[in-house]
Length: 134
Image (cartoon, rainbow, N blue to C red):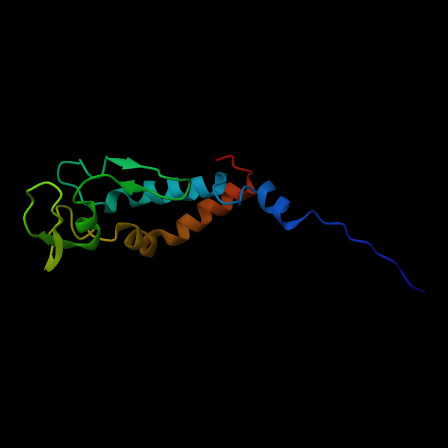
């Protein structure tokens, strides 16, 4: 005795979109926002200028809009003249010292993921399973 079984599936792109997993989709934005929220206590802060000047160039990126953000991210002091305008400074081999260290410091999202990566994964999984309802 033989049985003929037909399985009908949606195309992969539709399945991905239905679950919000497409590039720039709701899961991307949720992941970006979760990483930003959990990384906030790790971002260097003295006055709060850099930490509070963020933008979102796309659904999966966070940009810190301070002229010195790159140096803080690398954790190395800048050397060279700060004037005239347009002259680029270079990164030295001198480590920065941070208020709020050791939690606040360079490569903040990587250090946060080392500490809270499992929580990020669980939060994203819950977001997907609940269809984007938190």
